[in-house]
Length: 186
Figure 1 (tube, one colour):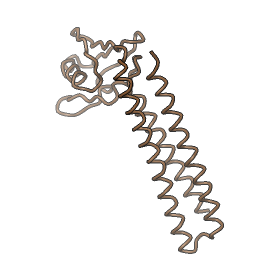
Figure 2 (cartoon, rainbow, N blue to C red):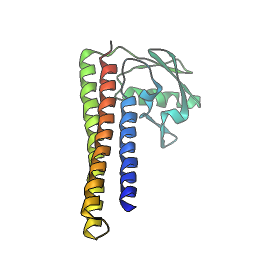
Figure 3 (cartoon, rainbow, N blue to C red):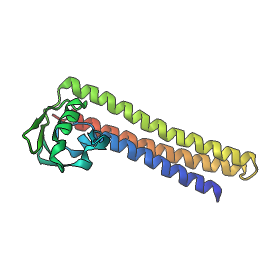
Figure 4 (cartoon, rainbow, N blue to C red):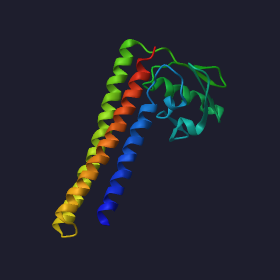
């Protein structure tokens, strides 16, 4: 049935919106070291913007320390500059072979800013899910208008679409709450 395929597509797209939101949340610094903190950092590698994790190994030897080991020692300076220029608020320590990043505890002000940012990103995730619902609903209404779907079937499928939407919005809300708790941990 065509309506079921529209629901399946909507479910897939909503799931991707939740996954994207979850990936974005992993880049927020919570006071603990995580290699994901460096996911958005790109290095100018021989004239090409390259993600840091493709030109260096990133390890977490302690709870508040990241160690970046470049595969090519010539990129050490570029990696140092990129981390310093990023919005992480972490000063790298370069010893000539590796870069150490000591993760300082978050200040109260920085925690509040990050929580605002998490809420904003969560709202973007919810909007993306609602946009999928709107597009799917428009598709189904067009099918009804073209005679491919009855009024009763349209009502039934719209209810299922709303259930899906509520389910995925709840997932984004849960992710947001979890990240907020992590940020508030001292």
